Amino acid sequence: MKFSDTIYSLVTAPINQNVAIVRISGEKAFDIPPLIAKFKEDDLVGGRVYNKDITINNELLDNVLFLFFKGPRSFTGEDVVEIQTHGSLFVISKIAKFLELNGLRQAEPGEFSRRSFLNDKMDLVQAESINNLILSKTKKSQEVSSAQLLGKSSSLINELRDSILTLIAEIEVAIDYPEFEETKQTNENSVKNNLELLLKKIRKIYKDSSIMTSVNDGFKIAIVGKPNVGKSSILNSLLREDKAIVYDLPGTTRDVVEGEFYLDGLLYKLIDTAGIRKADSKIEELGIEKSLKKINEADIIVSVFDSSKKLSKEDKFVLDSVKDKNNIIVLNKKDLTRRIEIDSKDAIEISAKSGNLDKLVKEIVKRTKKINVPTSNDVLLGERQLSLLEKSINSLEEIISTIDNSLSVDLISEDIKEVYSILSEILGEKVDGNLLDKIFSKFCLGK
Image 1: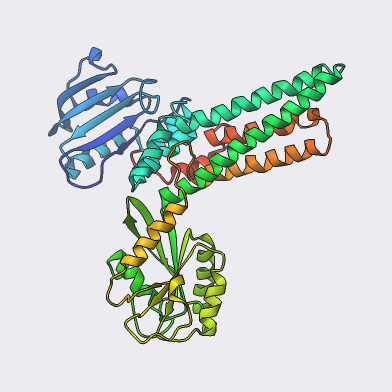
Image 2: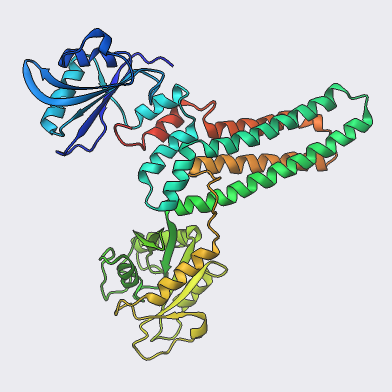
């Protein structure tokens, strides 16, 4: 794809530093270097690096490196020039102003990656993996994002698409040669078996991808309980910071508070919720609604109770809310006289006041291991990719149901082609500009 404008951006952070990099991409990219440094015409070819003094408006600014990448053999598929300066923001501002005066436009967030995608240098899964890699916070997140960038997930989708094309070919045989009844029956059985095999594969990918998305984003741990049982103290101890303000007044944490911490190389997103009870105000009611929502979204729940008091109606409501969930019961204030009617065999007893939460930490690690984090990187990541996988699963289930209702396979040909289109959408085929705006706006400037 040919773009009418040439873009530029600072690739490195906008601070004074050892080295700063300005990236230029587009038709005019190779026109800029001769305007600020001494170049011969035959110097302007791809794959070369030059050390030059740059001068703007007769003012010597810096001694820099110029890197030339000739399209399509560049990140964006266009002509690209990178200027590496000594990191002065003053120098960068001078260069930026000069580029603007010469008709260049500052790139929007993710615009270099967007041009790379539109110029078929990478598919949409690979493009999204760039941002995931930049934002990765754990070794596993980095491994999965790197594998996606190298095309492993894309190959997985292409294998599924190839299976669908084979299925479509089988169906067309049944349509083209209807006179062979025996062949038709064999073909229908084969199509159904292959559809079920395909569905099984996609279900596994979806399951593993859902878990890996939690690994990438951080396992969500919701801390729940009635007001003033010590939820905020537990959160602060795990985070080792005063994320939630702790008062003696019940109900003082009225909103959902989030923080992150690491255990055994995995990221956890800790959520301290508003106390669950009958609300005394509209504000508190909203907080409690958020708490119940977070319970349903959490991978692990830590329900906290005051062991020095008997179970109240509010406590029983909490227990009912976390029933059948991946719940860890914590009995806080073990330093006080025990009055609660929960068997200690079913719970972890702690004193959040002392800050010693070793038993709780060990139980969190134990519960995470039960989630069975995939060892393979054959996964997809993120809401967009997962929702399309889920859509393909639903479509395949409907197709198989159609066959079970004794309808001819030639009636499902278009439906199977629709599954192919859904999988193609994962890779970025036939996506609209609004979706691309949403995806690439999350990228940083210069990428």
